[in-house]
Length: 325
Image 1 (spheres, rainbow, N blue to C red):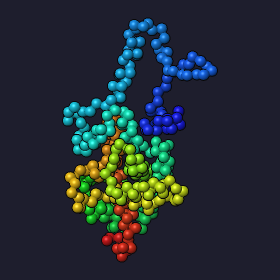
Image 2: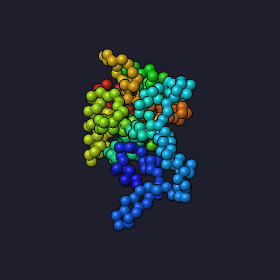
Image 3: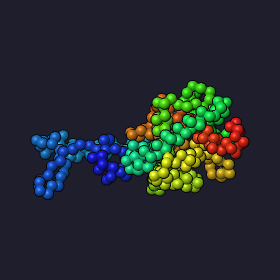
Image 4: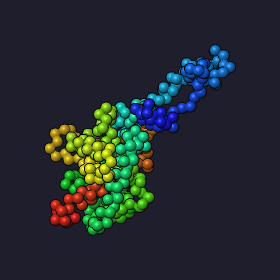
């Protein structure tokens, strides 16, 4: 059933375990069987039996109504977190029913991606893991005072941090480890932190690879081109494309450069804002409560600083090998 679902219904997203219901079938001719669903529960019920009438006339309508997600009718029904983040407004057109929710959530579903597009599943996951290990190794060769600077400037120092991201990310005093300098993670945390980065990259790459994807991130032409190059490398048999992955993720993790822009400001033009909304969307069309969201901010904090450190190390020779520059 899993194989059938992934090949015949991959456009719906999700997995067979969640989206398939068991039923009983019957056929009239064994030699050339054509199966049709039956309802044994109706056996013995008279034509005017109320339960039979409900099953035949109303059950489908009730199920259809249950699949529709009713939006909040007043601000009092909107949790405080959503009143600040506006995730529910941003994804309103992508959460009208359970089908659209499944499709939207598939952008961050790494398990489904591995079934449909392995280069965005295990291959991309392996690249993320290797990228984080490279950062871990390079971190050991960076002086602690220089690593302390990363704690003070969680985004690119030459571009002011976006106000909304700053208020959210800096609202929590916790860091991956309670230190005053950028430090390596506990071994048990690498998977969970890496999974978040995998989801972020996956969501962006899926929308680049599939122009028909209904949800779109605001990306520069350069980022789209870097994404296409990364996809081709992920499809190949070459070693993990660490450099290409870093070049692709760097502008996504850095604050958006608004200099010279004449467009009206919208925080949704920052891909990380859209990713946070997608990441916190649940199967039922609602969003995670505040106490389940804080870990995501810690993960993003870590990866923002990690990308800065990798970029600083990569360009160290351009600054006279001075990590403080």
